[in-house]
Image 1 (cartoon, rainbow, N blue to C red):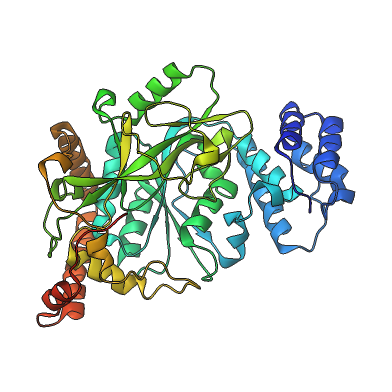
Image 2 (tube, rainbow, N blue to C red):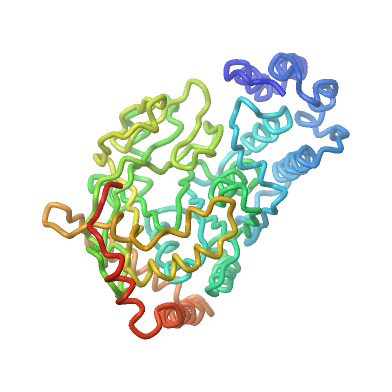
Length: 444
């Protein structure tokens, strides 16, 4: 396997897009001189360009990529479905799609699969790819928020839920609101990395959307006031500022919302409950799929050579310094990150995180993290949501709850949360743990 060069891979893209078999074969030979499939390049060219017989192989990963290419080819032949499929599955065998080593270690089959997926022309604009586990009490709020913001579909990856989330997610999927994908994990690859890799490299339905936001279930994109509560208004401003079409992604820096050490969960949406925040330098990403190479880093993208990444204020980002701490830019919007919430919610999340089977489990946080990664409420730390956001968001929540069976399932999850708190905390345990581990906020 070769250490791939971005310039050489671009020549493969050009030949593929031109459907030039001779040029594609030559470009592949230059790009992948030691690839296991080097001797079958002519077969690969006939397969990907003209739907010929797939190359013979006994490698499981390559067989999976061949299947992906065939499904994408068939999708382009068939009439486009009215909506994405309701359900999907990403087995443990697909962990290689997490693309941990990135572009330098791509096989020819991996790259040709991505080119085939990228050849699907989108007919819609905006989708969300999110990860959830045992987040049942936030499901309706999260999905309604992004639909209200203007996203047309939500793809949710989830695994091993223990709070009745599966029933609610499944019902929403059957109503056509979301696509839910069961994401099996072995413990050696982070669930989010695998989910994002699967979405980019195996999920043909996602290619019907031009712009995709990659987030966790506690992350809520908030455009700046001048863009209104509208993803379309934001992207319109982006395209006006950079009309050359070379913008591949936007980084929205975290605004880390704190709870002032709140003990118990209260009613209301997250932004109604928590109005105070601390700045944080890490971003999450809105990407233009056609210009994206990889989401293996999760927080930021790897984009095609010659394309730009911008911050929320639409200024170009120097990607060579992306992991260096910086002053966050909130001029065009931010990613509201609701990590601490209440101690009660943290306790339940910690208990569930402890059940996640990972080689290194970063989700079973120590109790003191609730306080260290929290903050106090001060006048200068307040970021209230606009009343217009509340109005349209609540209307969308009510619309979802009005769908057959949805309200009952959501209420059952809420009741299950209360039982979970009672079973974990016991008589006075919540208060004792809170007092025992309380400390002052520390650096994020």
